[in-house]
Image (cartoon, rainbow, N blue to C red; front, side):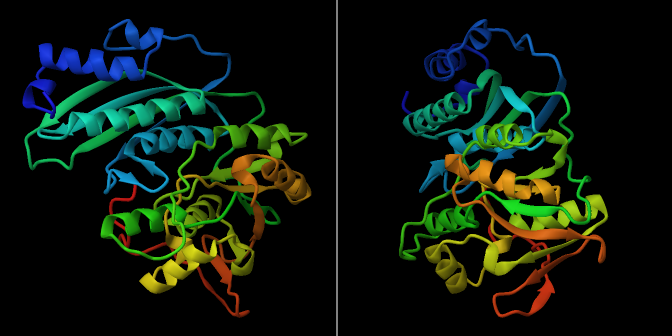
Length: 337
């Protein structure tokens, strides 16, 4: 068989072969190979962190990534934004009848590579098949668990007036790359998704602080981009925020593409960037730690937390004017994660 058939989700021999010949080979580890409907594992001492995410991106493959790697990166990053070390993932696949098994193999192998690079194991999962025309090739849901070390207390509710706001690198690359691939747009330059696992960067950041409690907030600005992430944390913490547009890293080709398409770069999704909010005395040291890691080489301090205008984010534009930076209304870039 070269394509997904209804039998692949029926619980019989075809499903067993799919699991054995594709998923188990790609994700090979003792917990998965036990063959149970669960995984029992030892964890280090500390608080547990858990997150889950569904991935329905179109197209399934795009410059810089695919749905397989993205499904690992998205959940690893959600766990890592607590300061935790991600350990294990589960993965559920919803496959459309007629989908190419070779295309599925490419996605699964990409997912396995992403998990190895992130230092996590995919230890349990599930597969379902929906009728032809009732899906979009493949959807993947991943759930991750990790362990949180002593003294780490990171939350979107911990921003305080005077804190500095940092970002790990250039923004809007994922959303623009996916849009260009989906619509077949030749926008010039090399447009690639920034999709990446950020847990290694977070570990370096925490190690660079004399006290991890000085790092108050972490957030990966995915759907809704930097604008949504900052507004969410401002509301959670009951504070205002001020950022300077000129300080936000943005590649020339991405800026040009956003201008052509009428997009606000600060509202476009990212999949390999993080926002950090820390005490002002720790900002320079945290920035240096971020820049020492490959995923933070272009990190920058882009603004500060203020006590007035709680729940709102002000943007100082490149022209020197100031306006409110609002989260996006509706969904300008559908199916990007």
